[in-house]
Amino acid sequence: MNSSLASHWIALKQGQRDALFMLYNEVYFHMVRQGLRMGADDELTKDCINQLFLKLWERREALKPVSDVKGYLMTAFHHLVIDELNYRKKLSQAIDRFASEEPQNERPYEEILIRGQHTEAMRKRLKNALAQLTPKQLELIQLKFFENRTYEEIAESQQVTVKTAYNTIYDAVKRLRKIIAPYFF
Image 1 (cartoon, helix red, strand yellow):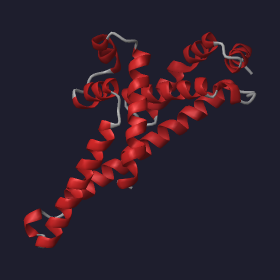
Image 2 (cartoon, helix red, strand yellow; image 1 turned 90 degrees about the vertical axis):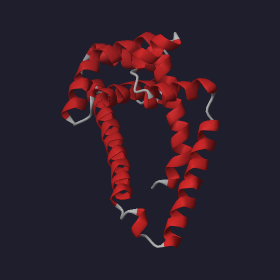
Image 3 (tube, helix red, strand yellow; image 1 turned 30 degrees about the horizontal axis):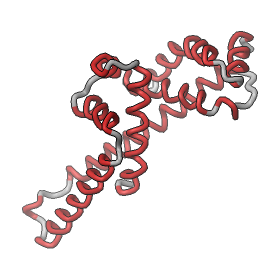
Image 4 (cartoon, helix red, strand yellow; image 1 turned 120 degrees about the vertical axis):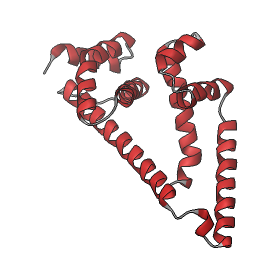
């Protein structure tokens, strides 16, 4: 057992923020390599790493003693990447299914009407979901997903830290998923 990681783990459980950063620094490059080997791109890999450490901080008081801290962190990271890759795969398959359907002009008129109503309902749900975001969340979602900016670019343009940009976008996406995801799967 690596005693420095174990001591950082204990300090993290006691609420010492520096311990979280020490753990992060100790395993960051190992996680990046693992994420890339698993087939995740660099943005997804970084997102999963940040997500893991945010969860650790949020749940620090409930953390159990761990004999192999690095192994525990790497396993938790591995599971996060797998979950995200599976989610992306399902989303991609849903989009492919939608795109591969026969052209609308070959469908019966009733089916075209139903699809149009379904599409309009989805637009309303999306509009409703976006309306539930704070103005800041909406702005950062726009920058990240519609303008394809990196977290670093967003942080710089908004004059916030990268962590704040990430947290704001993460919270917004989490809220949107809760509202919209049940309608896709």
